[in-house]
Image (cartoon, rainbow, N blue to C red; front, side, top):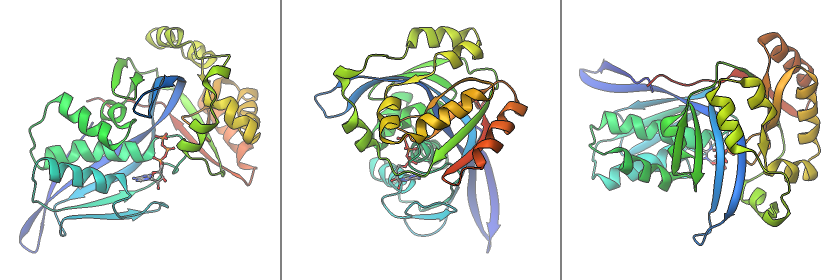
Length: 302
Ligand code: ATP
């Protein structure tokens, strides 16, 4: 994470500001192993951050916790994960300082790209620094998990195998920079709905997670592309055939592999080169019902 600590003077009073980027993720694999007694599911997923990001500015200003949202259809109250993150830290560590959080959304919302969790993780890391809180990695992970199952992954970013509810991470070397096309159909899906559709006993083809790990360790993007697999994809594609159409479109255009991210509905392609990525994106943009983004795999140097 690159934290930029700026000190400005406003009306004679020092104002501390942090400018942060919250990067989205794609799931290269996603498997659901079973339901747990606490109602959550045990998953096994290889995740990778991508360059598409939201911007988060933390500023010592206002009263309590204030959230300003730009360019995004997300609430600016307690329903927003960045607000909940600041409140959780204030309560846990009895912090009395105020913070204004300015959030510029670029990651599509409820798209399977983990936008809210990414914002929460970067806000958590930023506030820990801004408020000079002392907590170890375990405590940080525990707070992250309270905010959402994907938050622990975003505290690290890069490439990782994520297990359990999301709290068990095995870090992997990031893939060599690979062009990624994202196609987000404008259909409403919630994670809860997606899990309800999933019949664990009926899943026949599961991701080959160990093979994906080996491919990543060998920096073999072609093989990683071949191994892309998500158990939610068939469920989603049978309810919304557009998911299948988008995947077929990606694979026709020099993709190493393509699949759905998270519980959908965004479909991504790992593209062989930039020209192939732009070509596929241009073709997909002719569809009125899809938002298209061209980005790359990305891992911050921390
Ligand atoms: P995942 O891949 O982790 O399932 P997602 O990409 O499908 O996540 P999000 O974009 O994180 O989904 O948003 C899911 C819900 O969270 C939406 O209903 C949204 O209103 C709410 N939400 C709360 N805070 C945020 C935030 N900062 N950014 C985006 N969504 C937020």
